[in-house]
Length: 137
Length: 330
Image 1: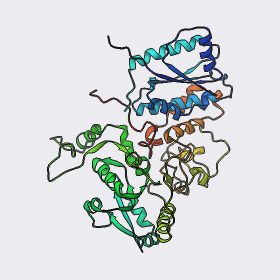
Image 2: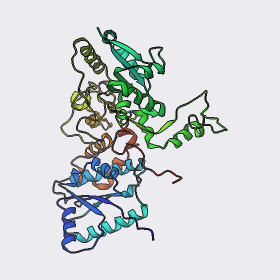
Image 3: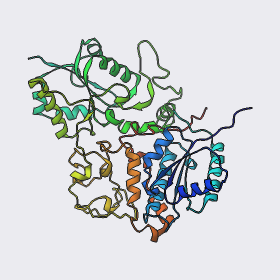
């Protein structure tokens, strides 16, 4: 039997919401696939598109960006909006590079949404399985 | 007086770089007194043999991107003998405008140019380089991807710019003169002969404390341009904030936005990503809550061809470097 493709996901999670949500999913003992490598950053507005491109270059099949809910949840007032604009424009550019925009996923996950975090990771892994491994040349 | 042996190899280049050297005028003439040219096809009647048979080369200048197998071969052969290698011009330093071809596979490019374009009549579907390998006519094959020079050989000095601006060329020639005349050392390996800040630092335009853009316009579409005010503040995409200084903001002084020919500033790794970051930040800055995601998305997505625009000179040297599409046949 052919081995099932296990996508690698790099997740950039903001310290105040998404990362706390991931912690909650952990302490609540929610099950979600182990394909994810979480990296906590102070704010989703701190995520430089360079980080995301570097992740793709190093072989990540998908990148998950997690931040606080818009409009008002960001600890730093508008970091989540900055992140939103960057990811939107970066998706457009990734299309030109031939990287499916579904490989970059932006989700707003609050500190109380452990369940949502688990669901998002599950969905994302399923989606990436369908897309297959990213071409690394 | 011992003369320095100089070889200039043009690779995938428009020869604008040759012109920029000659443009240096008196400094160039002075430099020639200390130089013995081994190879410079555009100016001297020396064939490739003189390059391949030269015993040693003191200074090797390469300008242009590495596009064909011949370019790679010549550069590698010359680099074996060269004591000091200079990447001259943006194509050599980062890949340059020809580097945008990296968004497509080689076969696609050849097919498009030699078969598919409207003005082409090529019933036998002949493609040079790939099918023509007659003994009499050897056309070098295109490499699959364009590379900046430092991915092929070790580079000692980078002279960016498209072409390198006059002051930098002069500085470059004067370093060579100082080296030949007084034995002063050439810049250490990895030096970039340009500024350490960004173009904004040199730009004379008035910059507001906070730049807020509600709509982007192309320079050709702009109805009115304030000649004293920052172009970004007027909604015209300018690449100054991520571009290395040293050009004295020559484009900005004539009402053209910076296109980024000097390459990334020292702290920037990937120019396109950094520009995405910068351009996104100023869209409705600090007013995001009021306008909401839909509106922000609309403004940002109106930017036509972000890869082509933000990587105009730096695609092959960037993080992704080339298309990541799968080939159709795979």
